[in-house]
Image: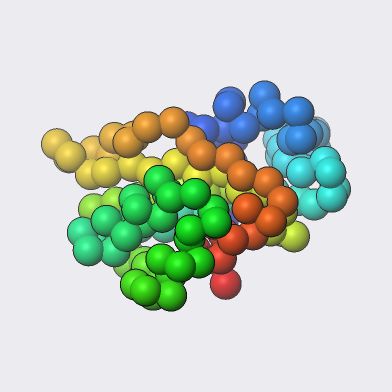
Amino acid sequence: MENICKMEMANAMFKMPCIKTEKRFLGLKTNVVYTPTNSQVVGDCLEYDLKNGEEVKQLFATESKEIEKILVQNGFPKSTINGHVRLLLCYSMDHRFVALQIFQYENFEYHSLGEPRFEEGENARILLSAFVK
């Protein structure tokens, strides 16, 4: 699991009214909670090769209603240890909230391909199903 506070999308996520942060363990640990369901939020980093990275970009840009159709057609993208495309995601343990941001490796470093995407409720569950089992 990744440290959510160090992710590039952390500030945008922490400004959302549905997210609450609490300092714990003498202020050394930050606990992030999705308030509508009181579920803990965790972070992860997945990397994809060129082919699967293009599928991830397509899923990222697609409306939640269409994602299941794409997954049936193309299958689930498979992550690798080191990849050309990096997906940072934060999600509630009950899968009712998800925040994603995509990066691409260019000129020896990863560059963001745009703003983070946030989904809640059933849309979050559908989007998250492509990346988390």
